[in-house]
Structures are given as C-alpha cells and as structure tokens.
Length: 143
Image 1 (cartoon, rainbow, N blue to C red):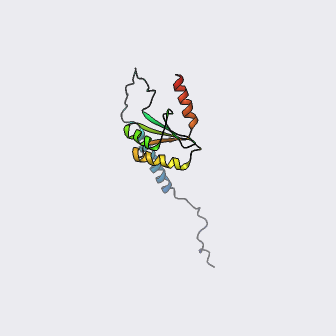
Image 2 (tube, rainbow, N blue to C red):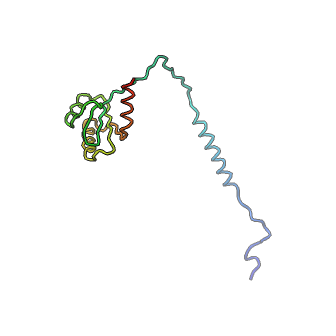
Image 3 (cartoon, rainbow, N blue to C red):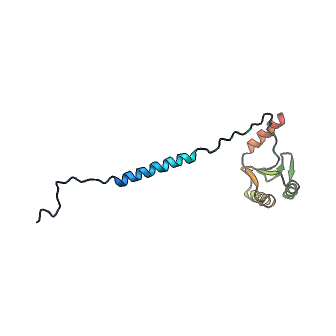
C-alpha cells in the first residue's frame, strides 16, 4: 500500500473562518439598520384635556336573557323577540349588549343571535356573567 494514499498527516487541519466573519458582519449591519429605523422620526406632543369628564352612561341597549328564556330590556321590562326587533329598529345607533345567563337554553341563544345579526349586521356584544350586570345596576342605582 502506498504511504501517500491517505495524504500527509504532518499538516494541521484548518477551518476557514471567512464565511463565519461574513455572516457576523451581515448580522451586525442588520441590527444597526433595524435600530435606526425603530427610533421615532418625529416627537409629537399632544395636548391634554384639562376639563374633560368621563361619560358615566354608554349609549346601549342592554338585553338580559334569563335562564327561563325570558328577555329583559335594560333590566326594567320584559319583552318578546318581536318587541326586541322593533326596539332595535327604533334605535339603530345604540350598541346592543346581550347578557346571556349560563343556564339559558341554546335555542334561545341562537334566536337572539340571528336577530342581532340581522338588525345590527354583526355588531353586538355578548357576555355570560350575569352577576356583574346585577352589581353594576345596584351600584348605579345607589349613586
């Protein structure tokens, strides 16, 4: 067997670091450019309102669906789906808030959603925590 077949073992293996250095330079350039673009171009100071008041009451229709399937508007009067539809037609600018009881029948839920989609074009809010509504009503009546 020839002794030169495996090459000369006297030379030490070397690793070419040129691609590694190129990658490091590209990463440094990327991060430097990214940092320059992340700074705000203009410092904008917006005026603050001095005499502003927060509105305590939102312009909305509160619909409570109880566990027995009854509908209550603003926790004051009981309505049917037909009366609810006429109420929604009479107040198209108001937001519809639907508070569903966790124990309410799913069929009632679907009928209310169909009506809300039809009358509000999909713009309404659904909540399942009935306790929060009762607490908020008690707090607002006490104030």
